[in-house]
Length: 429
Image 1 (tube, rainbow, N blue to C red):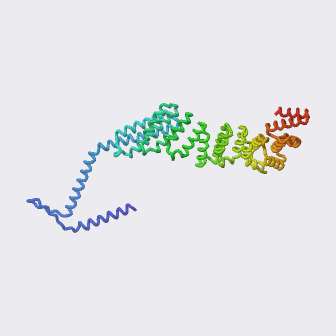
Image 2: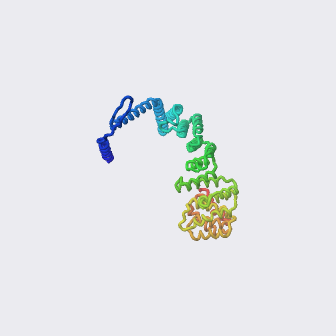
Image 3: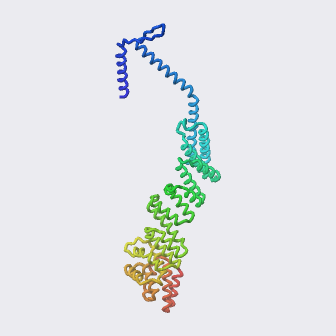
């Protein structure tokens, strides 16, 4: 279509010229004393057009001759720039392929090409826009690739040298993102060297926005866990879960593990309560954390009433007909309640009795009810409950305690053979 339009336009021009010049009788007279030259107007137009074209071609030729040095310089700069980018791409390819020595060599070659290009050309005549910001990013990236290769080769002095040069190159205000990348990479290298303090120092140098990115938070989580800063690691894990950096199950598992570690690090009841207050509502509702906190509180000789208040929600879930509380957690919960039977109050005794009546075949509840009766000196009922419980208990620790309690009851009523048999059963476990 375009060719047809050009052809129509050409014919239109030809027709216009023919109509204008065909019947044009105008004459141009040139006086050059003592001569007089008469020339047709059409010829004068052709001569002027020819002179204009000749002058234009001459000026273009002169400009081309005088621009040859600049074109040669531009061509050399273009070749160096192509070699520079080729070396940078080779360095990246070698690094991904695990050829760290070749990657370092290619990165150094890219730096040499960049330096020579900077000396050769300037921003005004650069063929591919080799501006100051681009040069800074390229130089920093080349240093970073060389430093990564040195880190992979365990050459820390060379790595630190290139790292420092990368930081200096990225100090330009137009290369802030490049500087953040260098600092994040330095933090990861510190983690690989098992230097969590240095990794945290690098992360603290990041701007506030960069410090909340997923990559920075992942690095912070690893560093705080490595440095045994459980509270900070837990806070970071919550942020990562909020940003959906993990799946829901993985995030819950990580948070639960860190919370268990935080509770386990307490050395007295006050520290344990402070650690418990650091948990949020969703974490304080996790059965594993609740039972672990209560168990830890009882082992630290804390307040049994507080421990029972913590485990009340788990107890209510456990006595439901289709409870999702596992057997291990049930046994641990029973151990927590058993350790505080001396100070247990009437409402809790009623709860235990009601649970045992509602589930009469549950050996664990029979054991707990029997031990509660034993603490209240209800010997006959304790004997009955423990005798039934010892036949169905699966946990070796609870069975051993049940046999020992039966042995004590037998000794109290003077039945030496029964006591000896109970002690024998306990010793076998």
